Length: 112
Image (cartoon, rainbow, N blue to C red; front, side, top):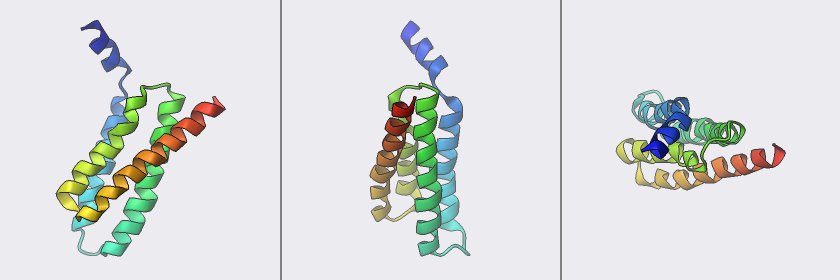
């Protein structure tokens, strides 16, 4: 029980909230806005915004010395949003986001 309490105190709740917001809510908004074309949604939301957020999560986890498993928060939230709102070919972006987050995490760890 003490391990769970320590883990909960160390868990970055702000990162989890932003991951849900970007991964699920922003995906839903991008999927259902009538003036956003599908190509614009893929390029703007999935590549630029989500890719940038993946870089941010990797750097934040490395700098705050958080648990490595928190790298999975955003990709899991994204795949939930993609499963509900987007076509199935967008599932592969989950692996891309996980790879980007891990690369930014490991590169930031080397600098520290």
